[in-house]
Every structure is written in C-alpha cells, then in structure tokens.
Image (cartoon, rainbow, N blue to C red):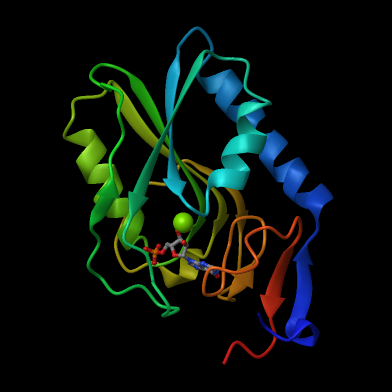
Length: 177
Ligand code: IMP
Ligand code: MG
C-alpha cells in the first residue's frame, strides 16, 4: 500500500455518482425501445458497472471481459490479449463497452475491433474518465463522464498494483514514483 499522504482527492463519491447518473440518462435516452448488452472490462469497471446498471431503464444484459493489463507497470505495453471472453451471442445486438478510464486507447481499440467482428447491430464505448491527451490509437468513445488531465488515479475501480480499487472516491498520486 502507498503512503496515504501522497493521495490527493480528485473526485469525490458525489461527483462520481453525478457523472454516472448523467451517463445513464444519455444511454436511457439513446437506447429507448432497444435492449443492450453491457460489456464491462475487468477488473476496474466493476464499480461503474454496478452503479450504472442501477440507473438504466432499458432491458440490459451484463457481460464481462478480461484483457491483459498493465501488470505492475503504469504505462500500457502495446500488446493486448484476451484473458476472458463474453458468453453472450452479440450478433444483431446493441453492445456498450463499459470502462472506468481510457489512456492510450490500446485496450479499448482491441476490444472494440473484436466485438465488431462478431456482427453486433452496434458497438459504442462508455467511460467514466478519459485521458484524451494520452490517446495513441484512435477509438470512438461516445459516452464520457469526465475528460481529465494526464494523472495517475486510484480508487473507484482504479488500482495501483492491485490495491485501492475499493476506495469510494478517486485520488491522484502526488508522487507516483
Ligand atoms: P489504455 O490501453 O492505455 O487505454 O489503458 C487503459 C487501462 O489502463 C484502463 O482500463 C486501466 O485499467 C488502466 N489505467 C489507465 N490509466 C490509469 C490510472 O490513472 N490509474 C489506474 N489504472 C489506469
Ligand atoms: Mg480497466
């Protein structure tokens, strides 16, 4: 665990909740009279998935994938592999990928292309946080909770070496190294 004095609060739980409710309202409006398959990206998206689905009024299936992660490094490696696939048949269905944060976009690009290849009616991306300035590959992100600066964040699903996902608020690290 990191020294707590290096953690500075970045978004508190009420701000996160407001952003999630706002995303849900957009989705409820855009997918009215449709049903959707949500695909959460393990492990970080577990918290936003749990909170978002409680605000959705459209018929919803919940799936998860797990992709190779940063491991113990803090920058993405460029190679992404699938560790756990979805179970549902998404052919002709509306798919929404649920992420907690996008950085280089490599993880999402890989998943987006893979899901598209399965013949869904549509695939869109939802993310709570977007480090837009860090994008290396182009990926169409339709629903963004907040566009943020390049900062290393923990809490609300975001981890540092697997710890701190459980924090209800989001913090940035003053001295990440
Ligand atoms: P990308 O492939 O570079 O876009 O990386 C996306 C993934 O890296 C996210 O799904 C997170 O798991 C992780 N990640 C990116 N930025 C942060 C951060 O600030 N804190 C913790 N994890 C992060
Ligand atoms: Mg993630």
